Length: 102
Image (cartoon, rainbow, N blue to C red; front, top):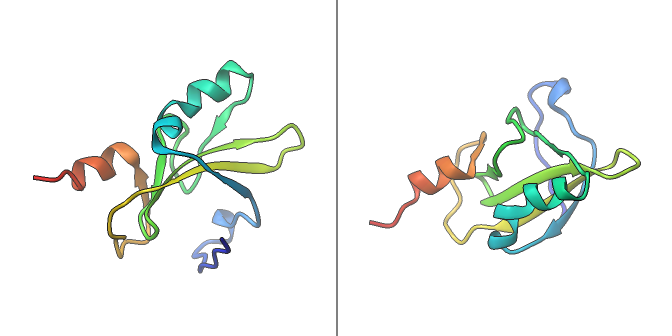
């Protein structure tokens, strides 16, 4: 997948990263899985590193981390809902609350 988007602030610009598609069940436990292996989870898009982040325009949940050379890597899991037209990212917990089926 190739993603192109407008950046409103140059400090927010992340020139590149590699993403690995994983299932949502693994994504939910990936922070602990990475930390058990001595790999720190990092924040992205103005969000911290404590919870998975949702790119609402896709929609997809993500966890970000760095490899030993400092390359940004991502575990990503596509969410099977319609995308939002909102530009900002949110935490997966917020997304889930907003998209609960009633």
